[in-house]
Length: 170
Image 1 (cartoon, rainbow, N blue to C red):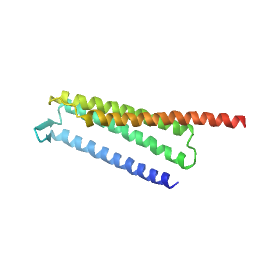
Image 2 (cartoon, rainbow, N blue to C red):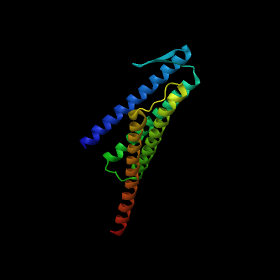
Image 3 (cartoon, rainbow, N blue to C red):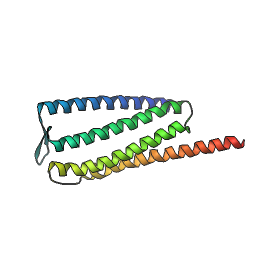
């Protein structure tokens, strides 16, 4: 029970922090678009400047906002599961469905991150390079996590079916 209380507390903190960061990011981008500011990225090799009003930059930002929103939604599905787990209804249909939904969202997020990390240099005309961590490992980790949650959702549905069948035979 202590583990579930800690899990609930951590998921609630994560959920609120993600929402606050999302709102702050939207406000920051809106201010940047209104002012027409230039966004500078300083690397050790070069300095790149991107205009907030550039359609290519806005497409990339919009894509990241969609992925971020999907992540918030996946965390909200996990938050929804906690009361069922605290009551001992681990193998209930709502838990399984929310695990499946969170898993699907994480799979979409991983694939979206991979596409964006490849498309960003192409759209912004910077030199094309594939960073193994940003382009491959992070999206792969998120997809594996999504598959893991999706698998558990299906396993919980099967367990619920077996439990119902077992109750009928007794």
